[in-house]
Image (cartoon, rainbow, N blue to C red):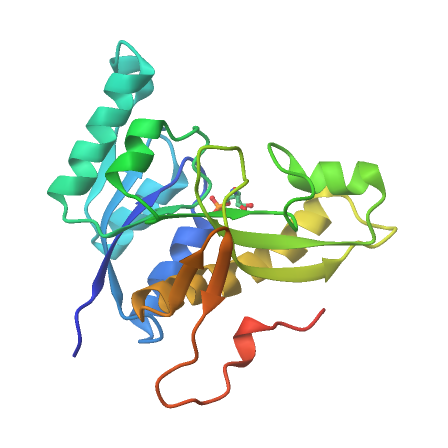
Length: 219
Ligand code: GRF
């Protein structure tokens, strides 16, 4: 078996994206290992999921640090000590500092519940509804110093229905998040993502087989 990519997953919330990643590792789709789950919230469901899966977890509470730099230094130290090769932001509700970015250059992924560059920032699903968008979706992207501005790896689209509430639209988008986030990590793990300026090129698999997940249909 080839090297398992060591992931550090950062999550502040329920952790359903984390769970999707754990599930794809367990069913053999994703050749990776969650080396550490880090949260800034002691009550995060993500920590509970980690406990259940027997994965090392750590809560770094920002209230225990004098400032943002020391908080970020503590996170970087924990990730480095765990031998993390790819940082996966999965509902992590803190901005990442330049120092953190420098510690993992082009090695931090995020998932955002909208089709970037539309509806960046908080409450993306509500933004899409209020704007009257007919299509929304989700985006996996590399993290840069902006808010949801980094190079796009994969996107999936969903319809926005007139009957939608924030909850129903979020649920429809979340189903796609759970599909494309493990897929993006798999592409990274297989060394198939090439970053050229802000374009992410996806190289074909070695056996040249069709990879239907890269261009997901509307559903
Ligand atoms: C997801 O909608 C993700 O796109 C956003 O935060 C939410 C996290 O959900 N960044 P979960 O904790 O993975 O369930």
